Image (cartoon, rainbow, N blue to C red; front, top):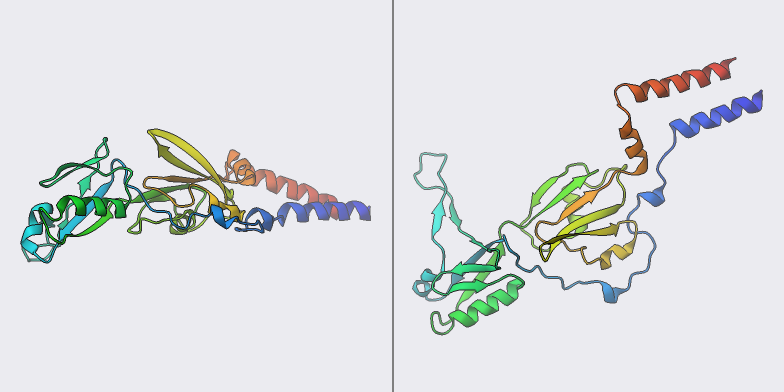
Length: 255
C-alpha cells in the first residue's frame, strides 16, 4: 500500500511540476563553429519594392540641386505653417530600377550601398558635379516575426544589417513554449523559400539567413506540449480533466 502511495505521489509530482529540459531552450550550445563559414562581411543588397533615399550633395550646392527629389513638409500640429521636412525616396520597380533625376532609369537591384554610390559617382562626376557626396539608405527595411514570441509583429528598422537574434529581441524573444528550431521565409527569384535555423546550436551563425533581408518572415512554432494543449479549450475541458484526475488520485491516497 505504501509503495502504491509513493508511486502515485511520484506521478503527481511528474504531472504538476514537470519542466522543459534546458537542452531544449538554451541558445548557443556546445557546437564548434567553422569561422571560415561565418559571413562577417554581409551587406544588404537592394531589391524590388525597396524605398531608397538618395541624397546628393557637393561643395557646389547649386550643382547638386537637380539630382535630388523635392523635400516635402508634413502638416504641423502647431500654429506654425511649416512642419517637419521629409526627404522623399525612390521606389525600386519590378525591373529593379529607379527613375533618377536627369540620369533617367538606373539599375539598383542586386547592388550594395557601396556599389550604388560608386556607380552614381561615376555617372555624375565630372560632367555634372565635380566632387559629388552621396548618402543612401533604405527607408522601409522591415521584417516580420510571427508565432510563439512575446510581441509578434512587423518591425521597421533603420539599421540595414539585422540578424535573426536582433529581430527576435525586437519581438521580446521566444516564449519558453516556443520551438528553438525556427523558420525564416524569404523570397528569392520571385519564389518563397523556407530556411530552418536551430537556435540551440552555435552553427546558426553560419546560416545563409542569419543576416536578414528586407521583408523576411521569422516563424516560431509552438513546442509539442503547447500544440497539444491548444487542442483543448483552456477555459473548460482541460481544467475539468486535470481537476478530475487530481481529485481521483488524492482520493486513492487518502484511503
